[in-house]
Image: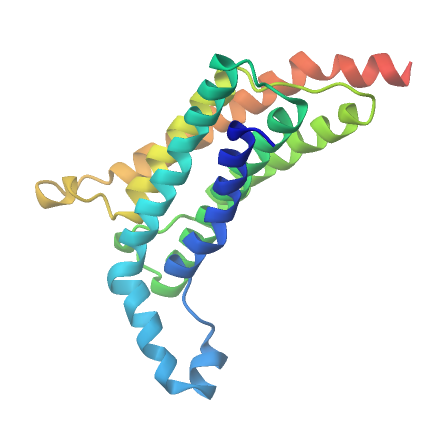
Length: 209
């Protein structure tokens, strides 16, 4: 396995580590083991900030593995397939954590994400992944386009802002940058998804014909 693919797989392995810092334990667990309530307190006080660091590091490797693969001419079908899967797992994990955060607090000030925004973004990823799987069965590997890369950047900024509670901008202004970026992420995500399907649905039509 080449270096770019190892980096991509490491991004996938970041997901459970990230989740440990941003998801609180269920209520029934802390009732059975009251000492674990301190864990939930840690998540609320510090976990989201630590999780944001892991998320930003993991997201940044997306460009690294692609750059190395192109520079060393090590682009493989496995890498083309795994790279977007790693991105989608990371984004889905972060959105689920932020929806949970919003549900628990019931307060937009806590910088959570509404279930509607998360559902739209995750649904787009399912649709695109489904299209890739269908054509992959025919030996066709669909690459991510420029809009897909832009979508990932906007999502990363929006999710990072939400995890960090708009810090450090929150020190000087109460403007909800996280909400603004998340709205932008939803728009770009939907647009890039429609564009991707329109450009690549011909692969399905040609095979079924």
